[in-house]
Image (cartoon, rainbow, N blue to C red; front, side):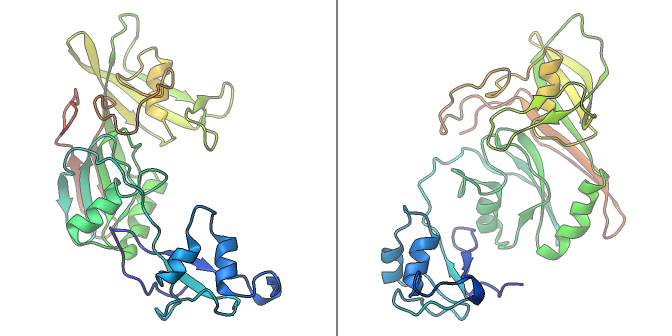
Length: 307
């Protein structure tokens, strides 16, 4: 296990960590200094000389790593990455529940669950670590960036295991609501069962005919609103884009979906048309104290742009 970071979190983000190769994998002629190794190890767009001059690389004791330090094998180095400017996602993050173990929030559309890619500061984890003063806050599951609704997070690493086990065992009951077209010839309720596959890096997932079932959703029409239906969705599995694909397959794609049926060119800072999909309820038996837990979103369909 690596040593604990000597750098405190910044903007809700832990410092990045690197480790030099072991002695039998090194070539002293290739990396005579730590500066040479850092320039080799980090992408070209990272200003390694500038960061070394500003003493932004530190060792496990918090001492600055200098560019002319002799290369040393099996050495940990920490630093904070430069973050790009990100358009602020409008709207608050309502806290539905908070105790010593769990935080349950009502995520707005367009806010990433975790920091990744172009969405780092504008993620639930980074924003709430700062807002709630919980530096170790981490999600127990994920919602797509464009999906709104309930997201559960653990306050400390020690609580992740018990609650994540619930999700692995499918012992968490989740209910979603979606706004989608009506079809007079569609017999409901219906259980959609098929095989969903998503290639890494692809925008869309796809249904694979005749493959073993790995995705299942109960679809029910709850009410009609202005010529559209509000559908209650009860997933029994949790595949990527499962609900969006299952409604598409029924001929009722979710309103304002930027990916289905076709990928739309939407600017990253266009928050005007939220996907009409809401993670509305979540319930389970608490694995720590055995008590029933149930949480409900404060949002209702149709969702409107915030801010």
